[in-house]
Image 1 (cartoon, helix red, strand yellow):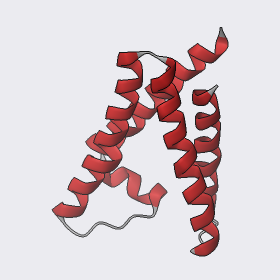
Image 2: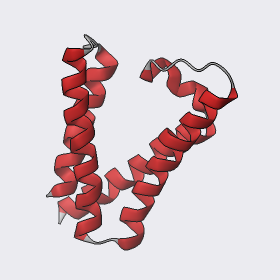
Image 3: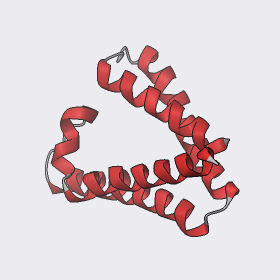
Length: 113
């Protein structure tokens, strides 16, 4: 009974993350380490970090099926895998990357259960 509630909460958190990136793209720069030069970069943050997260989270909620939550979970786990490898390859083991990795792993596991 608790897993569906947690899955719903993760989907909502995904949407909220997307909304923050969409509405306040310059606020995510400090956390992500991204540097934007001009409107093109801001548009990319809104589109990729904003719209993609909104679309993924909303799709899971809209279809409300185990497969859609699993799809979102697999996405989080793949992001976590790539982040973990990249943290070593790129020598970017910093607190914000570590926090993102932990959240992605937790979200991914909750969603695939």
